[in-house]
Image 1 (cartoon, rainbow, N blue to C red):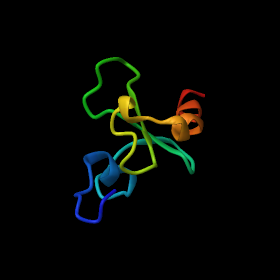
Image 2: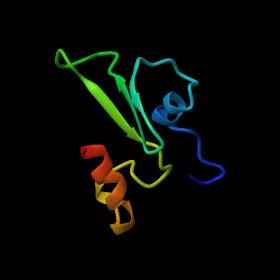
Image 3: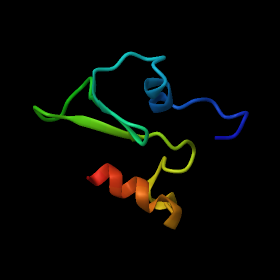
Image 4: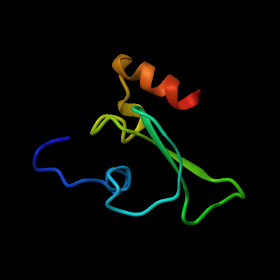
Length: 72
């Protein structure tokens, strides 16, 4: 993340600046319940790497381990 870029909503949630209902967390991912679920179980997974995985199309070979961890 660039020094001048503002934190995203998801970065604020991971940092605890915005409250969430955590269901799982480790060094790679933060998972929490959606505040407006579209299904009975609606969990959002947020990778903790900053500035690279805001869109899947921006993923590189360096992100394979993180993406695999999210799917696991």
